[in-house]
Amino acid sequence: MSERILLAMHKTDNPCRLGWDCGNPATFTADALREIRDALSPAGTTRTLAAAYSYSYVRYPIDNVRESIRNTIRAAREVRMPVIFHLDGVNWWNAHPELWNWFDPEKPGYSPENIRNVERSDWQENTAVQIAWRNWGSQIRVLPPPNLASPAFLKLQYDALDVLLPLLKDFAESDPDLFGGLVFGWELSPYVQAYYYENGNTHRTASPETDPRGGLAESIALGYAAAETLGLQKDGVITEQTIDGICTWYLDKLISHALSHGIRREQIITHSYWGGETKKGGGHSGIASVRPGVLPGWSFYGGEIHEMDRQLAMAPDGWALIECRPWDLTVPFLRSVYDTGCRIINIFNWESIREDEKTLDVLKTILA
Image (tube, rainbow, N blue to C red; front, side):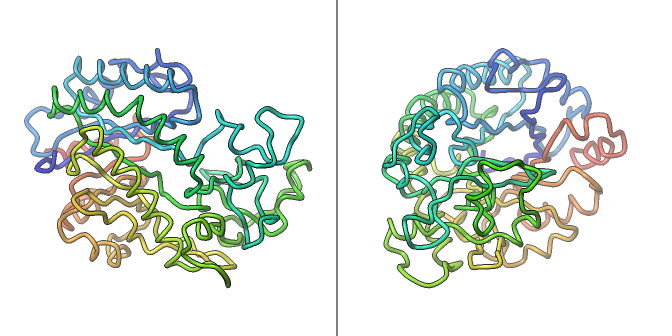
C-alpha cells in the first residue's frame, strides 16, 4: 500500500443508482465498482484507480455493517479494484440510545447516567447537550456528539471493531493489492460535525424552522466533557491544544486496537479536522492525524493547496487528501496536490461526478 499512488472515488451512502447503504448490505455490488472502472478506463495508468466508502459502524446494527464489508470485499475481488475502508464510529451513533439518551424518558435507552457519554458546552455537567447540528450541504439536526473519552463510548468502539477488523486483516493479507487502506476518523472533532449553538437545548422540542443559523462560525465549541475526563484542561474557554489532545487520544486508542488485530501501521490512514474555530473557543491544528507510522489524512475543499501549508509541514513523509471536493477539478490542481507528496486523493463523492464528462476527462488525464 505504501508505494502506491491512489486516485479514489468515494461512494455516497445516499439512496441512488448503484449506491451503497449499510442499512441494506445487498446494495454493495460489483456493478458499482464496474461503473467507476468503465467510466475512467484505468488500464495502463501510472496511478491506481480505487473506490472508497464510509462505514458508520454504530449507526446501524453491527451485523449489517459486517455483511456490507463482506460484500465490498467480494466486489473488490471480482472487479479487481482496490477499496479504502473508512470506519467511523463518531458522526452517527443512532443505533445506541442506551449511551446518548440522557434527556428523554419517553424514548428508548433513557438513563440520566448517559449524561457522561455526551459532550458539554462548558465545564458544568448541566451544560451537556441534547441536540446538535451539521451542515453537509444544508443544516440538519443530529444527535448530541459523544464524549470521545467516555469509557462506555470507547467500549462501544472496541466491541464493534472486534467484529469488523478481522475481516479487513484477512483481506489485507490475502489481497494486498486490493486493500486500499483503513481510515480512522471522519474529520474527527468533538464538535465540528455536530456543532452547538448557545442555548441550543431549548430548540430540541421546538420546530426546526426556529433553529438558529450561521453554522460552525456562529456555534460554541464543545469538548469540555472529554477534556475533563482526560485531565487536559479544567477551566477557561476550551483551546485548540486541548481539542488536538482529545482527538489524538481517541485516534491512538483506535490505532492500538487495530494493531492488536494484526492490521499494520502502514495500512492505516487518519482523518482529523483542521480549523473549526467558533465564536467561543475551539479549533484544530490538524496534528491529531500525525501518528507514528500511519498515513496522515485531511480534507481540503479550498482552491489552492498552499492553503494547507501548515498541515503539509506536519507530513514530510506523505499524506492523504482523504476528502477532496468534487467540483471545479482541474489537471493542474490535482497535479499540484500529488506534487506535495500526497499518496491518495479521494474524490467526495463519485455520484456527484459520474455524469460530468468534463470532470471525468480530468480524472482520466490524471490517471494516465
